Length: 95
Image 1: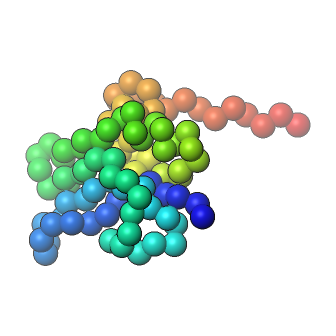
Image 2 (image 1 turned 45 degrees about the vertical axis):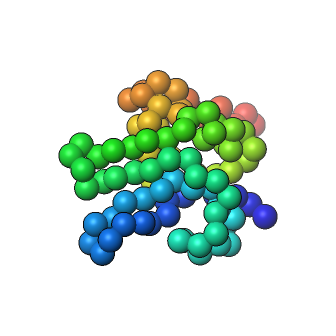
């Protein structure tokens, strides 16, 4: 099965907080997960993003694919290079 790095919603009604987790691609949004990598609190000013970069890089190396939102959060947290810097571009396909 393919693994995804995605958000798992926790928190009360209308006060969302999210955990960044590694889960099977077929698992429910708030269902079973393999590992917790950090958390994201969008309602705080400024928004809080806490990620264990070592474990995130390890899961990415194993082939786990992040969702678009998590990819953005990982970039902000500095998992893809330095914080605030753009992620390295994928090599161009040669024909």
